[in-house]
Image (cartoon, rainbow, N blue to C red; front, side, top):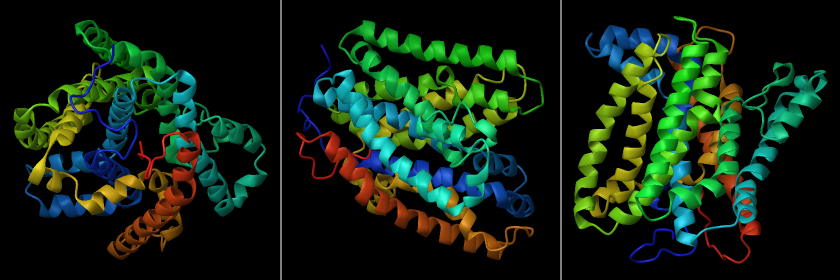
Length: 388
């Protein structure tokens, strides 16, 4: 039988504010990563010139690993879906997949149309029909006919979609009571780590960052399944630990401890990624990210107010729309796209793009995402559907 809460949560309802805040952290990290693609050559010399030399490599490794926002999104996805499963007592595969499709596809398809409207030059490309088919079927993370990538960041939706197809069959197994379910979940996590390590060893050309290496380590579901499963197992742990006052008291300290642990994981991953055996630091990164999520959702009282401030939670609520449109906003806001980056350009580009992304993200949430979820859940009567 599935785990149960001592005080049952609503069958469906708003997500925990900590989850919204963590989604806010994740999308801001992704935004920084994509803004930094152009401006890191400007920022890096400034850091090297002004920061204490022992700290420079650590600061740079954090900046280089802003893509960690995707890792956090994957763990949060596993946690949110796992907690929803436990709240509802289980869902049929049809019900689950309908809800997931309603959550992801309408807003994504609208974003595709909007993005193409601003890049009309691609409409004449011979491979556009094949590329559109790949995007509409959410396969763009694995195939890109003609090299056409309409929304670059949405490769992660392909990985998410693969997990959605597996989840209705995994959830009843790993979210049940008893040690057997935990052992199965642990086996899936370790199996994912071994798959990633094997792919790393097979594909690696030492010192060379190839597209195939990136795909095997970042995009393929066998190499990412650990983060979704760890998130679901963290939801199971939350159900048990949420009854404990001691866990709530320890959670803020555990959350603080996760931050330096993450930086160490970033540093190890950056140093080892292009070397033989360099896939193992990723396991540490996944574990610490799952621990961070669990620690955050266990925070109560004053710690909760610090972990989940309202502005950050708002960013998390609209994060999917921000995710879909922030690269378009960054491109449109670049004041001098062909010139060397300047501090003026950095400030103008990032400020405009962030504000525009938040506005459009909110519009996407209100006009597309929330109505789509309500349509898929007519019997639930949610006043504000969870952004999960």
